[in-house]
Image (cartoon, rainbow, N blue to C red; front, side, top):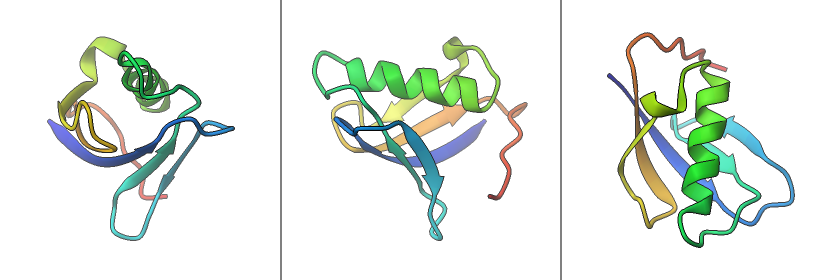
Length: 81
């Protein structure tokens, strides 16, 4: 499995995903952090970005935090840009 360190910023005006110099992904989400809406949007974005089913994206820690650990299958190709 591939583990990503992610920092989410809910309630953003635009969706975006950027990898910083420490290797953490900063992901701006439009959804509010209410009733799991931001987590659902995060899973949808990551599944689309890495071309995998949403069922293969797993939030391992940080369900109610802005800092999260996300687990993806080994078959994901993660570019360094």
